[in-house]
Length: 384
Image (cartoon, rainbow, N blue to C red):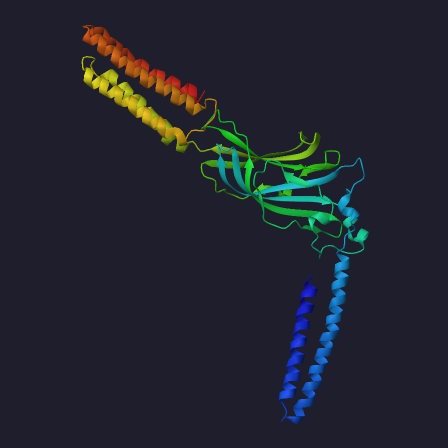
């Protein structure tokens, strides 16, 4: 291919030089000694250019013929029936830019490398080399590989393969976009999630195509740009999946990423403010029951603060039908705040009825029981 480009450059130079010599010979009418040599040199260069052009045309035809692949290579597997074709799959992660709990998806940028052997494409079988050619994927047999859990992946490169003189085929493609990822948020925000990239052959079953993990082409860059998560490479597994729409088994390779959520954001945005609201409500136990106004004011302010805070959590908490760990903590804290409000009303009622000693005793016990109950709620919801 590089020889063709150099030949075309040389041909252009010959033509330009020939035309320049002829023009110079015509213009040099007064310089008789220079006129005829220039004309002859120009005509010679043009003759050489014509000969080079004809040679280039023949070379183009020869190259085009050398890149021709028999059609049977594109329609049949390279291995006989009963022997599956081994396809090495390598996934190299370039970046993970986001994890969406609500849509249950993640956004990734990665390379997919496929390698297999097709002896029919070797130099010995074809009688020529394909190393300088750029055959398209559709011109040869390939395992019809796709990403099962892709949503809107975008391809960066053309579907072109590389073939060496031994018939080893390499297909490389770079993908960027969203992939579906079912999440389990019961341990939110202390959860780890598995982000899969499920590669499958949509046409061939395990008896025809056997995936193997390409360790040399599987890996990742040092850091990802995703915020709020630490993402590491997980295990890659070769499996067989039943594809219900076609009622058949597919050869699959499941490449996994393990994402661990950063807790710090939710600690400062949810857990710490809610803890302060709970202890704000518990301060009513330190106010004398005879002081009805201050007791009710503090208890009511705590309830209103809690309600406003719960409204603000709408964009932070995942919308799932089951209770996550943080949901359990919020629910337990809410019950404690309303329990403190109810205790303040009851002790004030007892004090106004003349039973001040009992109301103060209840407050003293509440000062101990209330933080113990909060500790139980925190341990049961966040750690156990």
